[in-house]
Length: 160
Length: 160
Image (cartoon, rainbow over the protein chains, first blue to last red):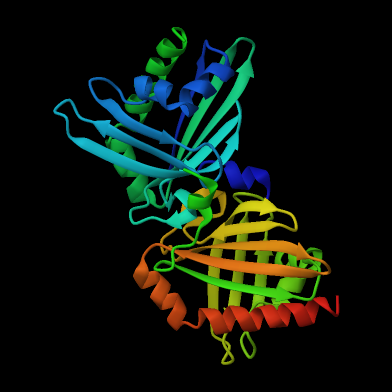
């Protein structure tokens, strides 16, 4: 198996958001890996994040509680798989912290950051089990949602 | 979350085989990570392993095809999570290679090797989603099976 085969998204199964943003990748990394920053930008408004736990190492917890405008809570538990500072962050909800298989696997996320001068090429890939998972995520608004969240991230990092 | 909480097995959900074997851990590592060696010892006889693919890095494939004495094939696909040479090997079948969530998650395995003079303390932990998974694995003969396989590994490494 080559690296290309490992990481190349499958258009039937995966969703990709790629953007160049005008903030350095060190700030993008910080926004993704520190709860006090992540809570500010992670959910497209008027939704919000009321809680976030991060144990930044393979096997560590990445959990968030999203709140609807009406206050309903949507907890999400994941487990980090790869933590390469300022370069690559991988986590999945197919595993709970400590690598325990989870009840309701949905997707694995890979965030890749590349420097482009003072900007960052930002690539977020969501990897699903099957086509139904990809479609469901698309219908939930993956592109608009992750795009808006990224705009919120950029706006927040400029105030950091 | 502390390291202790991350790695401490839960007796309701997990199974552990711990043994001290009289071979150095470098040989145990080799036996676990090279297909030509793994195929010799991985299945308690008269079962056998007819195929094995190993891409030894996080996200890489770990697949085996086990054969019953009657020749029936039982393929098993997994994905490596942690690869720390001579120390720790972690993989799961909750993910396919490239971290894609799998259809039939069953367990995550953690193999820990510690030097004890010229011997090795060998700890294999199987982490399940729920109690039913742990019971099923126990009834499939986890302790006898993994124990016999380890004896076969030791016998093989002495001929390496």
